[in-house]
Length: 100
Image 1: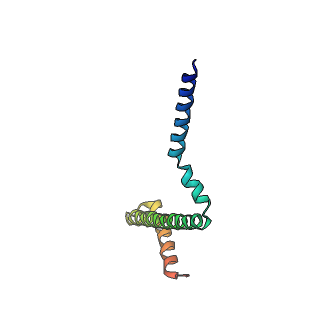
Image 2 (image 1 turned 30 degrees about the horizontal axis):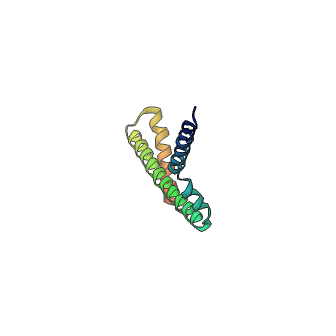
Image 3 (image 1 turned 90 degrees about the horizontal axis):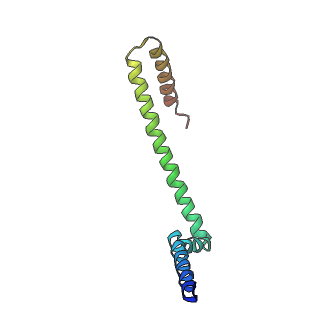
């Protein structure tokens, strides 16, 4: 292997590493670490968005389950219908209490 081939190999490796570091956006990450208020702000916003998403998703899921239980309760199935009707009555009673 000649000196020129070795230099070309080192150049290719260095170029590959530089491209990988650019793809990983390490410069943006280190810049973010040097501004703690921006880091905190981004984390607060991300946490708020995650919390709102979880609340909306759970509300939709719970409403769907309650609706399905009401429909099943209306079918008057022998054993399951009574159990579902009890669950629906408990949930409706809790909603009427308004403990907040």
